[in-house]
Amino acid sequence: MTKLLDSDKLWSKEGEAATLASMMLERDCIPGVLAVVQADDFYLPENKPIFTALVELYGANAPTDAVALRTELKKMNELERIGGVEYIARILDSVPSAASAGYYAGVVRDRRQYRDLLQGIERMGKVLDEPLTVSEQVQAIQDIALSLEAEKAETEFFELSEHATAVVGAMPDHQDVIPTGFRNIDRIIGGLCPGELAVIAGRPSMGKSGVALDIALNMARAGKSIVFFSLEMGHKALIERAACSLARVNGAALKSGAIPPQREFAKVCEAAFALEKVDIVFHEGGMTPAAQLAFIRARKKSRGVDVVFVDYLQLMSGGHRNENRVQEVSEISLKLKRLAMQEHVPVIALSQLNRQVENREHHRPRLSDLRDSGSIEQDGDIVILLHREDYYRRIERPDADGDDLDGRAEAIIAKNRRGPTGIAGLVFLEEFASFGDLAEGQV
Image (cartoon, rainbow, N blue to C red; front, side, top):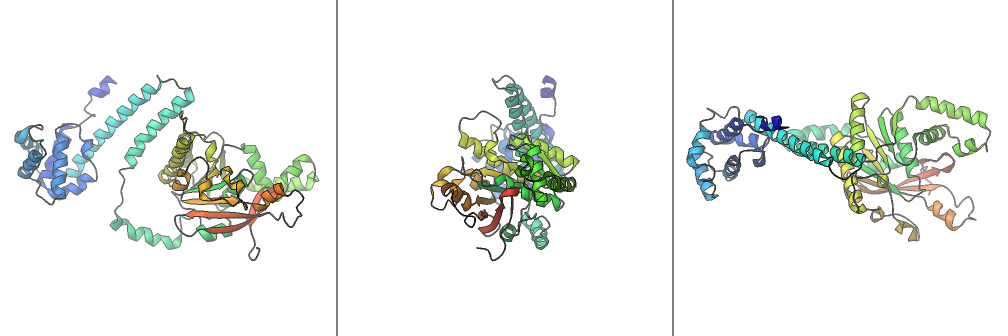
Protein backbone atom coordinates (compact mmCIF):
# COMPACT_ATOMS: atom_id res chain seq x y z
CA MET A 1 0.00 0.00 0.00
CA THR A 2 2.87 2.38 0.83
CA LYS A 3 4.26 1.94 -2.64
CA LEU A 4 0.88 2.78 -4.11
CA LEU A 5 0.55 5.90 -1.95
CA ASP A 6 3.96 7.17 -3.08
CA SER A 7 3.08 6.66 -6.73
CA ASP A 8 2.45 9.57 -9.08
CA LYS A 9 -0.84 7.86 -9.87
CA LEU A 10 -2.36 9.79 -6.96
CA TRP A 11 -2.16 13.13 -8.75
CA SER A 12 -0.58 14.86 -11.72
CA LYS A 13 0.85 18.28 -11.00
CA GLU A 14 1.45 18.79 -14.69
CA GLY A 15 -2.05 17.65 -15.68
CA GLU A 16 -3.76 19.97 -13.21
CA ALA A 17 -1.63 22.96 -14.26
CA ALA A 18 -2.17 22.27 -17.96
CA THR A 19 -5.95 22.02 -17.48
CA LEU A 20 -6.12 25.37 -15.69
CA ALA A 21 -3.76 27.02 -18.17
CA SER A 22 -5.93 25.84 -21.08
CA MET A 23 -9.00 27.38 -19.43
CA MET A 24 -7.15 30.69 -19.12
CA LEU A 25 -5.80 30.62 -22.67
CA GLU A 26 -9.07 29.69 -24.38
CA ARG A 27 -12.37 30.21 -22.57
CA ASP A 28 -14.25 28.25 -25.25
CA CYS A 29 -12.60 25.04 -24.05
CA ILE A 30 -14.20 25.37 -20.58
CA PRO A 31 -17.50 23.55 -21.41
CA GLY A 32 -15.50 20.55 -22.60
CA VAL A 33 -13.38 20.60 -19.44
CA LEU A 34 -16.48 20.84 -17.25
CA ALA A 35 -17.85 17.72 -18.91
CA VAL A 36 -14.84 15.81 -17.57
CA VAL A 37 -13.80 17.30 -14.23
CA GLN A 38 -15.09 19.33 -11.29
CA ALA A 39 -13.27 21.29 -8.57
CA ASP A 40 -13.07 18.30 -6.21
CA ASP A 41 -11.18 16.31 -8.85
CA PHE A 42 -8.11 18.51 -8.31
CA TYR A 43 -5.70 17.20 -5.70
CA LEU A 44 -3.48 20.22 -5.02
CA PRO A 45 -5.40 22.59 -2.69
CA GLU A 46 -4.24 25.74 -4.49
CA ASN A 47 -5.76 24.50 -7.77
CA LYS A 48 -9.33 24.03 -6.55
CA PRO A 49 -10.09 27.73 -5.99
CA ILE A 50 -8.45 28.59 -9.32
CA PHE A 51 -10.73 26.16 -11.13
CA THR A 52 -13.76 27.52 -9.23
CA ALA A 53 -12.82 31.12 -10.08
CA LEU A 54 -12.42 30.31 -13.78
CA VAL A 55 -15.82 28.60 -13.86
CA GLU A 56 -17.40 31.61 -12.15
CA LEU A 57 -15.85 33.95 -14.71
CA TYR A 58 -17.06 31.79 -17.57
CA GLY A 59 -20.57 31.66 -16.12
CA ALA A 60 -20.61 35.45 -15.84
CA ASN A 61 -19.53 35.71 -19.50
CA ALA A 62 -16.34 37.46 -18.36
CA PRO A 63 -12.77 36.96 -19.65
CA THR A 64 -10.81 34.10 -18.10
CA ASP A 65 -7.30 35.46 -18.67
CA ALA A 66 -4.71 35.94 -15.93
CA VAL A 67 -5.80 39.50 -15.10
CA ALA A 68 -9.47 38.54 -14.70
CA LEU A 69 -8.49 35.45 -12.68
CA ARG A 70 -6.35 37.51 -10.33
CA THR A 71 -9.24 39.91 -9.71
CA GLU A 72 -11.70 37.07 -9.09
CA LEU A 73 -9.35 35.26 -6.69
CA LYS A 74 -8.77 38.49 -4.78
CA LYS A 75 -12.54 38.92 -4.47
CA MET A 76 -12.74 35.34 -3.13
CA ASN A 77 -9.90 36.07 -0.63
CA GLU A 78 -7.93 33.24 -2.22
CA LEU A 79 -5.18 35.05 -4.14
CA GLU A 80 -2.52 34.99 -1.45
CA ARG A 81 -3.39 31.48 -0.33
CA ILE A 82 -2.80 30.01 -3.78
CA GLY A 83 0.59 31.69 -4.11
CA GLY A 84 -0.32 35.01 -5.70
CA VAL A 85 0.27 36.15 -9.26
CA GLU A 86 3.58 34.25 -9.35
CA TYR A 87 1.70 30.91 -9.12
CA ILE A 88 -0.74 31.98 -11.82
CA ALA A 89 2.23 32.86 -14.06
CA ARG A 90 3.81 29.43 -13.50
CA ILE A 91 0.56 27.73 -14.48
CA LEU A 92 0.32 29.76 -17.67
CA ASP A 93 3.82 28.67 -18.63
CA SER A 94 2.87 24.96 -18.41
CA VAL A 95 1.32 24.72 -21.92
CA PRO A 96 1.65 26.74 -25.13
CA SER A 97 -2.03 26.37 -26.18
CA ALA A 98 -5.40 24.95 -25.15
CA ALA A 99 -5.50 22.43 -27.98
CA SER A 100 -5.19 19.43 -25.64
CA ALA A 101 -7.46 20.69 -22.84
CA GLY A 102 -9.65 17.58 -22.98
CA TYR A 103 -6.66 15.28 -22.61
CA TYR A 104 -5.31 17.16 -19.59
CA ALA A 105 -8.72 17.16 -17.93
CA GLY A 106 -8.88 13.39 -18.48
CA VAL A 107 -5.57 12.98 -16.65
CA VAL A 108 -6.97 14.92 -13.67
CA ARG A 109 -10.11 12.78 -13.67
CA ASP A 110 -8.17 9.52 -13.85
CA ARG A 111 -6.02 10.48 -10.87
CA ARG A 112 -9.16 11.30 -8.87
CA GLN A 113 -10.63 7.90 -9.68
CA TYR A 114 -7.41 6.23 -8.59
CA ARG A 115 -7.52 8.07 -5.26
CA ASP A 116 -11.14 6.99 -4.82
CA LEU A 117 -10.10 3.41 -5.53
CA LEU A 118 -7.41 3.52 -2.85
CA GLN A 119 -9.88 4.99 -0.35
CA GLY A 120 -12.31 2.20 -1.22
CA ILE A 121 -9.63 -0.40 -0.61
CA GLU A 122 -8.88 1.19 2.74
CA ARG A 123 -12.56 1.11 3.69
CA MET A 124 -12.74 -2.54 2.65
CA GLY A 125 -9.80 -3.31 4.93
CA LYS A 126 -11.56 -1.69 7.88
CA VAL A 127 -14.61 -3.88 7.27
CA LEU A 128 -12.53 -6.91 8.24
CA ASP A 129 -12.08 -5.45 11.72
CA GLU A 130 -15.79 -4.86 12.28
CA PRO A 131 -17.87 -7.31 14.38
CA LEU A 132 -19.76 -8.75 11.41
CA THR A 133 -20.36 -12.22 10.08
CA VAL A 134 -18.38 -13.30 7.03
CA SER A 135 -21.45 -12.90 4.77
CA GLU A 136 -22.06 -9.41 6.16
CA GLN A 137 -18.42 -8.48 5.54
CA VAL A 138 -18.66 -9.75 1.96
CA GLN A 139 -21.83 -7.72 1.48
CA ALA A 140 -20.25 -4.57 2.94
CA ILE A 141 -17.23 -4.92 0.64
CA GLN A 142 -19.54 -5.40 -2.37
CA ASP A 143 -21.47 -2.26 -1.39
CA ILE A 144 -18.24 -0.27 -1.28
CA ALA A 145 -17.23 -1.53 -4.71
CA LEU A 146 -20.66 -0.72 -6.15
CA SER A 147 -20.58 2.76 -4.61
CA LEU A 148 -17.37 3.50 -6.52
CA GLU A 149 -19.02 2.53 -9.78
CA ALA A 150 -22.20 4.45 -8.93
CA GLU A 151 -20.18 7.63 -8.38
CA LYS A 152 -18.63 7.20 -11.80
CA ALA A 153 -22.03 6.52 -13.42
CA GLU A 154 -23.45 9.73 -11.98
CA THR A 155 -21.10 11.74 -14.24
CA GLU A 156 -22.62 10.33 -17.43
CA PHE A 157 -24.75 12.80 -19.36
CA PHE A 158 -26.58 13.03 -22.67
CA GLU A 159 -27.16 16.19 -24.65
CA LEU A 160 -30.83 16.55 -25.58
CA SER A 161 -29.88 18.21 -28.87
CA GLU A 162 -27.78 15.20 -29.85
CA HIS A 163 -30.13 12.40 -28.76
CA ALA A 164 -33.69 13.70 -29.17
CA THR A 165 -34.11 12.72 -32.83
CA ALA A 166 -32.57 9.29 -32.38
CA VAL A 167 -34.63 8.44 -29.32
CA VAL A 168 -37.95 9.68 -30.64
CA GLY A 169 -37.27 8.21 -34.07
CA ALA A 170 -36.98 4.76 -32.53
CA MET A 171 -40.29 4.99 -30.66
CA PRO A 172 -42.70 3.84 -33.39
CA ASP A 173 -40.88 0.53 -33.81
CA HIS A 174 -41.21 -0.32 -30.08
CA GLN A 175 -38.07 -2.39 -30.42
CA ASP A 176 -37.25 -2.24 -26.73
CA VAL A 177 -40.74 -2.93 -25.39
CA ILE A 178 -41.19 -6.47 -24.07
CA PRO A 179 -44.83 -7.63 -23.89
CA THR A 180 -45.97 -9.46 -20.76
CA GLY A 181 -47.96 -11.90 -22.89
CA PHE A 182 -51.22 -10.91 -21.17
CA ARG A 183 -53.28 -9.07 -23.76
CA ASN A 184 -55.34 -7.09 -21.26
CA ILE A 185 -52.27 -5.91 -19.32
CA ASP A 186 -50.30 -5.01 -22.45
CA ARG A 187 -53.28 -3.05 -23.77
CA ILE A 188 -52.78 -0.63 -20.86
CA ILE A 189 -49.01 -0.54 -20.28
CA GLY A 190 -47.81 -1.60 -23.73
CA GLY A 191 -45.19 -3.90 -22.23
CA LEU A 192 -42.02 -3.36 -20.22
CA CYS A 193 -38.98 -1.31 -21.21
CA PRO A 194 -35.30 -1.66 -20.24
CA GLY A 195 -34.45 0.42 -17.19
CA GLU A 196 -37.93 0.14 -15.69
CA LEU A 197 -38.81 -1.24 -12.26
CA ALA A 198 -42.22 -2.90 -12.36
CA VAL A 199 -43.82 -3.97 -9.09
CA ILE A 200 -46.48 -6.68 -8.88
CA ALA A 201 -48.04 -6.53 -5.42
CA GLY A 202 -50.73 -8.45 -3.61
CA ARG A 203 -51.76 -10.10 -0.38
CA PRO A 204 -50.63 -13.69 0.30
CA SER A 205 -52.35 -16.30 -1.90
CA MET A 206 -53.36 -13.77 -4.55
CA GLY A 207 -51.10 -15.52 -7.05
CA LYS A 208 -48.13 -13.13 -7.33
CA SER A 209 -45.64 -15.92 -7.98
CA GLY A 210 -48.01 -17.53 -10.44
CA VAL A 211 -48.54 -14.44 -12.57
CA ALA A 212 -44.81 -13.64 -12.45
CA LEU A 213 -43.96 -17.14 -13.65
CA ASP A 214 -46.59 -16.86 -16.39
CA ILE A 215 -45.09 -13.57 -17.58
CA ALA A 216 -41.56 -15.03 -17.43
CA LEU A 217 -42.65 -18.02 -19.52
CA ASN A 218 -44.44 -15.79 -22.04
CA MET A 219 -41.34 -13.66 -22.45
CA ALA A 220 -38.97 -16.62 -22.65
CA ARG A 221 -41.12 -18.35 -25.27
CA ALA A 222 -40.91 -15.09 -27.25
CA GLY A 223 -37.11 -15.47 -27.28
CA LYS A 224 -36.10 -13.39 -24.25
CA SER A 225 -33.43 -14.41 -21.74
CA ILE A 226 -34.83 -14.42 -18.20
CA VAL A 227 -33.24 -14.38 -14.74
CA PHE A 228 -35.73 -15.30 -12.01
CA PHE A 229 -34.57 -14.74 -8.43
CA SER A 230 -36.83 -16.99 -6.37
CA LEU A 231 -36.42 -16.32 -2.67
CA GLU A 232 -39.55 -18.19 -1.58
CA MET A 233 -40.02 -21.20 -3.87
CA GLY A 234 -37.25 -23.63 -4.82
CA HIS A 235 -36.33 -24.20 -8.44
CA LYS A 236 -37.86 -27.70 -8.49
CA ALA A 237 -41.27 -26.38 -7.40
CA LEU A 238 -41.09 -23.62 -10.00
CA ILE A 239 -40.16 -26.02 -12.79
CA GLU A 240 -42.98 -28.40 -11.80
CA ARG A 241 -45.44 -25.52 -11.76
CA ALA A 242 -44.22 -24.24 -15.13
CA ALA A 243 -44.52 -27.66 -16.76
CA CYS A 244 -47.98 -28.35 -15.31
CA SER A 245 -49.19 -24.89 -16.31
CA LEU A 246 -47.95 -25.34 -19.85
CA ALA A 247 -49.49 -28.83 -20.06
CA ARG A 248 -52.71 -27.64 -18.39
CA VAL A 249 -52.47 -30.40 -15.79
CA ASN A 250 -53.43 -30.11 -12.13
CA GLY A 251 -50.02 -30.64 -10.56
CA ALA A 252 -51.28 -31.10 -7.01
CA ALA A 253 -53.80 -33.72 -8.11
CA LEU A 254 -51.19 -35.47 -10.24
CA LYS A 255 -48.70 -35.72 -7.36
CA SER A 256 -51.36 -36.92 -4.93
CA GLY A 257 -52.66 -39.59 -7.31
CA ALA A 258 -56.12 -38.04 -7.41
CA ILE A 259 -56.11 -38.14 -11.22
CA PRO A 260 -54.94 -40.96 -13.55
CA PRO A 261 -51.18 -40.40 -13.79
CA GLN A 262 -50.21 -42.00 -17.10
CA ARG A 263 -51.84 -39.69 -19.62
CA GLU A 264 -51.41 -36.53 -17.55
CA PHE A 265 -47.80 -37.30 -16.75
CA ALA A 266 -47.09 -37.73 -20.45
CA LYS A 267 -48.46 -34.23 -21.05
CA VAL A 268 -46.21 -32.81 -18.35
CA CYS A 269 -43.17 -34.58 -19.82
CA GLU A 270 -43.98 -33.16 -23.23
CA ALA A 271 -44.21 -29.70 -21.68
CA ALA A 272 -40.87 -30.24 -19.95
CA PHE A 273 -39.22 -30.97 -23.30
CA ALA A 274 -40.70 -27.72 -24.63
CA LEU A 275 -39.36 -25.82 -21.61
CA GLU A 276 -35.84 -27.02 -22.39
CA LYS A 277 -35.92 -24.68 -25.36
CA VAL A 278 -36.53 -21.51 -23.34
CA ASP A 279 -33.85 -19.41 -21.65
CA ILE A 280 -34.82 -19.04 -17.98
CA VAL A 281 -32.43 -19.38 -15.07
CA PHE A 282 -33.83 -19.76 -11.55
CA HIS A 283 -31.58 -18.36 -8.84
CA GLU A 284 -32.27 -19.12 -5.19
CA GLY A 285 -29.41 -17.20 -3.56
CA GLY A 286 -29.90 -13.58 -4.64
CA MET A 287 -30.93 -12.28 -1.24
CA THR A 288 -29.33 -8.84 -1.67
CA PRO A 289 -29.28 -6.33 -4.56
CA ALA A 290 -25.50 -6.64 -4.72
CA ALA A 291 -25.65 -10.43 -5.08
CA GLN A 292 -28.29 -10.09 -7.80
CA LEU A 293 -26.24 -7.49 -9.64
CA ALA A 294 -23.12 -9.67 -9.52
CA PHE A 295 -24.99 -12.65 -10.99
CA ILE A 296 -26.71 -10.57 -13.67
CA ARG A 297 -23.41 -9.13 -14.87
CA ALA A 298 -21.82 -12.57 -15.02
CA ARG A 299 -24.85 -13.97 -16.82
CA LYS A 300 -24.88 -11.14 -19.36
CA LYS A 301 -21.34 -12.02 -20.39
CA SER A 302 -22.16 -15.70 -20.97
CA ARG A 303 -25.79 -15.87 -22.08
CA GLY A 304 -27.31 -12.40 -22.03
CA VAL A 305 -30.14 -11.06 -19.84
CA ASP A 306 -33.32 -9.39 -21.12
CA VAL A 307 -35.61 -9.39 -18.07
CA VAL A 308 -35.08 -9.88 -14.32
CA PHE A 309 -37.70 -11.14 -11.84
CA VAL A 310 -37.44 -10.91 -8.04
CA ASP A 311 -39.84 -12.99 -5.92
CA TYR A 312 -40.20 -11.21 -3.60
CA LEU A 313 -38.94 -7.85 -2.33
CA GLN A 314 -39.73 -8.23 1.38
CA LEU A 315 -37.65 -11.42 1.57
CA MET A 316 -34.54 -9.53 0.50
CA SER A 317 -31.89 -8.07 2.76
CA GLY A 318 -30.06 -4.79 2.38
CA GLY A 319 -26.86 -6.73 3.06
CA HIS A 320 -26.02 -5.14 6.40
CA ARG A 321 -27.56 -4.87 9.84
CA ASN A 322 -30.42 -2.39 9.92
CA GLU A 323 -32.93 -2.32 12.74
CA ASN A 324 -35.23 -0.03 10.75
CA ARG A 325 -37.02 -2.35 8.32
CA VAL A 326 -38.79 0.50 6.50
CA GLN A 327 -35.46 2.15 5.79
CA GLU A 328 -33.96 -1.16 4.66
CA VAL A 329 -36.83 -1.88 2.24
CA SER A 330 -36.52 1.68 0.89
CA GLU A 331 -32.84 1.04 0.22
CA ILE A 332 -33.60 -2.28 -1.49
CA SER A 333 -36.26 -0.67 -3.68
CA LEU A 334 -33.90 2.10 -4.78
CA LYS A 335 -31.12 -0.38 -5.54
CA LEU A 336 -33.44 -2.49 -7.69
CA LYS A 337 -34.34 0.62 -9.69
CA ARG A 338 -30.65 1.47 -10.10
CA LEU A 339 -29.97 -2.12 -11.16
CA ALA A 340 -32.62 -1.82 -13.87
CA MET A 341 -31.11 1.41 -15.16
CA GLN A 342 -27.45 0.38 -14.93
CA GLU A 343 -27.97 -2.98 -16.62
CA HIS A 344 -30.62 -1.67 -19.04
CA VAL A 345 -33.14 -4.41 -18.30
CA PRO A 346 -36.70 -4.40 -16.92
CA VAL A 347 -36.83 -5.61 -13.31
CA ILE A 348 -40.13 -7.11 -12.16
CA ALA A 349 -40.22 -7.26 -8.37
CA LEU A 350 -43.02 -8.86 -6.41
CA SER A 351 -44.16 -7.19 -3.21
CA GLN A 352 -46.49 -7.87 -0.31
CA LEU A 353 -49.40 -5.61 0.60
CA ASN A 354 -50.31 -4.81 4.19
CA ARG A 355 -53.38 -6.06 6.06
CA GLN A 356 -55.43 -2.91 5.54
CA VAL A 357 -56.74 -4.46 2.32
CA GLU A 358 -58.65 -7.10 4.26
CA ASN A 359 -60.51 -4.53 6.36
CA ARG A 360 -62.25 -2.96 3.34
CA GLU A 361 -65.64 -4.01 2.11
CA HIS A 362 -64.45 -5.01 -1.35
CA HIS A 363 -60.80 -5.69 -0.44
CA ARG A 364 -59.56 -3.81 -3.49
CA PRO A 365 -55.92 -2.72 -2.89
CA ARG A 366 -54.44 0.75 -3.26
CA LEU A 367 -50.94 2.09 -3.79
CA SER A 368 -50.79 3.10 -0.13
CA ASP A 369 -51.12 -0.58 0.84
CA LEU A 370 -47.58 -1.42 -0.31
CA ARG A 371 -45.94 -3.01 2.68
CA ASP A 372 -42.98 -1.64 4.67
CA SER A 373 -42.11 1.38 2.56
CA GLY A 374 -43.61 4.18 0.53
CA SER A 375 -40.46 4.20 -1.58
CA ILE A 376 -41.66 1.12 -3.48
CA GLU A 377 -44.47 3.27 -4.86
CA GLN A 378 -41.99 6.06 -5.58
CA ASP A 379 -39.29 3.94 -7.23
CA GLY A 380 -41.61 1.75 -9.30
CA ASP A 381 -42.24 2.88 -12.88
CA ILE A 382 -45.20 0.51 -13.10
CA VAL A 383 -47.14 -0.82 -10.13
CA ILE A 384 -49.66 -3.64 -10.64
CA LEU A 385 -51.89 -4.60 -7.73
CA LEU A 386 -53.22 -8.15 -7.99
CA HIS A 387 -56.73 -8.74 -6.66
CA ARG A 388 -59.09 -11.73 -6.56
CA GLU A 389 -62.38 -10.96 -4.86
CA ASP A 390 -63.55 -14.57 -5.03
CA TYR A 391 -60.61 -15.51 -2.76
CA TYR A 392 -62.22 -13.46 -0.01
CA ARG A 393 -65.71 -14.74 -0.83
CA ARG A 394 -64.42 -18.25 -0.37
CA ILE A 395 -63.14 -17.40 3.10
CA GLU A 396 -66.15 -15.34 4.17
CA ARG A 397 -68.75 -17.62 2.55
CA PRO A 398 -67.49 -21.21 2.54
CA ASP A 399 -70.85 -22.41 1.20
CA ALA A 400 -70.79 -20.12 -1.87
CA ASP A 401 -71.87 -21.77 -5.10
CA GLY A 402 -69.64 -22.26 -8.12
CA ASP A 403 -70.94 -19.21 -9.98
CA ASP A 404 -69.76 -17.00 -7.17
CA LEU A 405 -66.27 -18.52 -7.29
CA ASP A 406 -65.57 -17.75 -10.92
CA GLY A 407 -61.83 -17.14 -10.69
CA ARG A 408 -62.06 -13.58 -11.95
CA ALA A 409 -58.99 -11.54 -11.08
CA GLU A 410 -57.90 -7.96 -11.56
CA ALA A 411 -54.48 -6.63 -12.44
CA ILE A 412 -54.93 -3.07 -11.23
CA ILE A 413 -52.44 -0.82 -13.03
CA ALA A 414 -52.18 1.72 -10.20
CA LYS A 415 -49.11 3.52 -11.56
CA ASN A 416 -47.70 3.81 -15.05
CA ARG A 417 -45.07 6.47 -15.75
CA ARG A 418 -45.41 6.01 -19.49
CA GLY A 419 -49.15 6.08 -19.87
CA PRO A 420 -52.60 5.37 -18.50
CA THR A 421 -53.69 3.40 -15.46
CA GLY A 422 -56.64 1.03 -15.38
CA ILE A 423 -57.79 -2.48 -14.60
CA ALA A 424 -56.82 -5.48 -16.72
CA GLY A 425 -59.24 -8.38 -16.43
CA LEU A 426 -57.65 -11.77 -15.73
CA VAL A 427 -58.89 -15.20 -14.74
CA PHE A 428 -57.15 -17.36 -12.16
CA LEU A 429 -56.92 -21.00 -13.21
CA GLU A 430 -56.59 -22.48 -9.75
CA GLU A 431 -56.00 -26.09 -10.78
CA PHE A 432 -52.98 -24.98 -12.82
CA ALA A 433 -51.83 -22.19 -10.42
CA SER A 434 -51.80 -19.97 -13.50
CA PHE A 435 -53.54 -16.93 -14.99
CA GLY A 436 -55.13 -16.13 -18.31
CA ASP A 437 -56.80 -13.13 -19.97
CA LEU A 438 -60.43 -12.52 -19.17
CA ALA A 439 -62.32 -12.87 -22.43
CA GLU A 440 -63.77 -9.72 -24.00
CA GLY A 441 -67.38 -9.16 -23.00
CA GLN A 442 -67.06 -10.95 -19.67
CA VAL A 443 -68.09 -8.85 -16.68
